[in-house]
Length: 151
Ligand SMILES: CC(C)(COP(=O)(O)OP(=O)(O)OC[C@H]1O[C@@H](n2cnc3c(N)ncnc32)[C@H](O)[C@@H]1OP(=O)(O)O)[C@@H](O)C(=O)NCCC(=O)NCCS
Image (cartoon, rainbow, N blue to C red; front, side, top):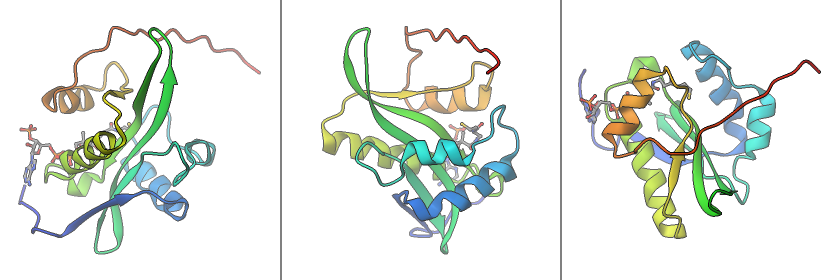
């Protein structure tokens, strides 16, 4: 895959007006077990005080995003940045965009004095697992237990 020209990709904070483009990109990818919806995006509160999400743009079009949020969790109590979702347009993958999105997030966390980033990854998503491990993320010792019921 060819390298992208220097400066072709702009990484910037996500805003509310990006919601439609983010959802469209998620639909284009089409492989997520649980596709993003408006509720997810509104809950993320793009541009809000706890939001730490970024988008990658080429020529004004969004080609990737990382949805992340500051969170306070127990066991033990910690302030950390949680990555809920990261996606690069399949037409633009393997050109360094994912690495740059993550790099921008790390830089932002450093500026804010947050020293832990936790990525939520579906267990069998080998692509994402490899991506995060290559970037120095280690498997966490916190295990999630979910209970779901019809409401
Ligand atoms: C995982 C994912 C985010 C990675 O994004 P990406 O932009 O393709 O990743 P990058 O290009 O930054 O890095 C991938 C590889 O390209 C290489 N690369 C980095 N910069 C590069 C550049 N400028 N030119 C060419 N290759 C480059 C990286 O070294 C890496 O190589 P490696 O695989 O040998 O380590 C992307 O593949 C994706 O969106 N996958 C689907 C994720 C998913 O399932 N999301 C569900 C919702 S959470």
